[in-house]
Image (cartoon, rainbow, N blue to C red; front, top):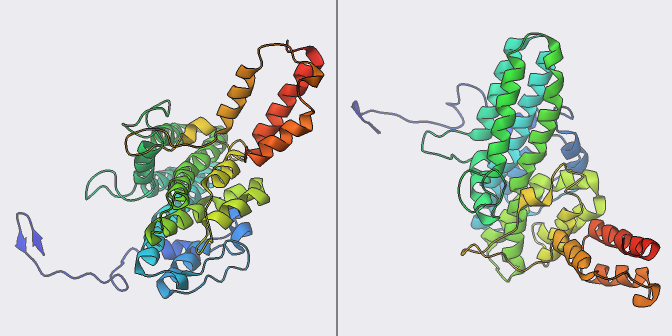
Length: 362
């Protein structure tokens, strides 16, 4: 290889033999346990090293051997699909979990009054989230994913309402990273307490890119794309976030899995969107933080969003309602369910209409 200012040098690198620092994404997955942020994932997949099993199965072109849920049969994929699963599984399934693992370790070290180790672990977490920029910004890990997806969902900027600029997720996360650094720079274990909320919030924010990725490729496939690349990308993004959804609602996680899994018979974007919307609050998120999928021209794609349904109902009710204005609240509920409106929205609308019957719309 040629090095500027030095000239040609003999250099070879073997992935198997020349990794002198002993670190690899596969190795981290193999040593994962049920602590340090991995609990929901181990419960869902049935094993702690689920990421290594996912990627290894894709390399070998076989089905995963998860004792739990979330199985995938990569023998149905050709090179394109398996390539996407391996790359994005390594980058977008492993990276956030390693980041969370080091954030949790920083808190443990802090509580044990080992502040040097705590600071080091916190810095490592930031590095594993950001990735190397040696070949240019924004790298290839989670920071880069947030930068890509914010443009697809008009979720860039401080208010998550712009098509360009730094992603809302990355702006928020680096506020958290900087705040944690300040806390760890203070004397006394009493400054460890605020780290708990910072880590929980960081964990929630890191799932946004995975949600956006699932929705983006779910929409592509739902709209008629038979690209193995699109199908596999949707499957791997879903795999990275399904355990979080499952911890909130097993039924909604199953809906997402059935529509996005490897080899899914069909994909219904609206059902996937609704299943996610049902659980944003439980996952520590708000719908506006995820944003709305837009096309290449920045125009919002056609879909039923929960907040629009609520706003529409509220705007339509200008006069006090009599009880015979509709046949029954249950009729309204049935109509909303038929339209695939999210469960949380249905509950809110039904409560709203019931209150109108009780107080005349005041």
